[in-house]
Image (cartoon, rainbow, N blue to C red; front, side, top):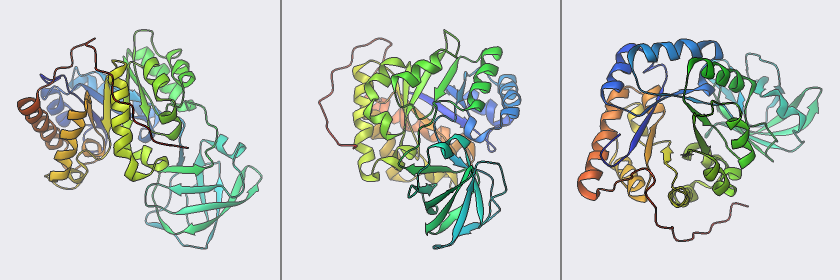
Amino acid sequence: MSMAGVRIMCTLGPASLNPVVVRELDARRVDLLRINLSHTRIEDVRAAIDLIRACSDVPISLDTEGAQVRCGSVVPDLVLETGSMIDLLPTAVQGDAHRISLRPRSIFETLEPNATMTIDFQGATLRVIGLRGNGARAVVERGGRVESNRAVTIAPAPSLPPLTRKDVAAIELGRRLGIGHYALSFAASKEDVASVRELIPSDAHLISKIESRAGVLNMDEIIVGSDAVLIDRGDLSREIPLDEVPYYQKVIVRRANRWQKPVYVATNLLESMVINGRPTVAEANDIANTLLDGAHGLVLAAETAIGVDPVGAVDMVLRCILAFERTHFRAFPEGSPAAPPPEMSASVA
């Protein structure tokens, strides 16, 4: 943790889940190392924990899949053409131009005709035209590239449990191995938070992620029931207009400060460093403004999970934090009162 109390969370993945990088991150005193269950098979979680612990004393956070829909594995370079028909299946299949699998399978229980689906941010958009047994049939309304294991946004949103079976299994493993930090993805209500509290160790630290319309609507009760909150701006932008996301970030940060709960900000902090060795000025400016708004933590996701230089990305964040300390030092001691934020209103209906 820096002098100003700013915490750094790093997501581990193919570019960083190795002894060399983990030791480098440990040397930089990052605060949390995140295992993203959306991109980690349950059978690989134990090995990831063992590797991290062999190289570092930094606490590990298990980040759940949560109430989200994802597509399954697809063939390389899959492009869906506008106007084509495709089957949506609850069973795991190798997706192609004619069929694709979706999980969790429970979404098909509440899926409605004419529901729309957008795969990833710039992927294809589908419209359900009929239900078939346990699956569905859809037309591609806007063609686009589809990659494996990508998030799928459905409108109207289906009713989903806060945890998947995989999440529950991972939490049980985490309990046995003494993991002390857990993140609830797509927290939608105080009931979601409470249900996870019942599963994790009584002394564990729970981070609830506000990244959906429901999460925004119920932000206060989610913040109050959590040990910290995390704003995932990427997933939030699937349900909130992109141009409004920066303002919602400010609202959530201020509400978290009002309730004296730490708040992390994630997604695209140093997006250009996924493929480049240097960020843009706009990215440095984004980090500065995020800290000036009162955020307590910064999250590197793709930058450290799949980026070309995970350690360099952390070094850049550290430099940004040092610049913040030099030019606008603010301390965030535990339990310090935060001034109530001005009320800000915005419709998410």
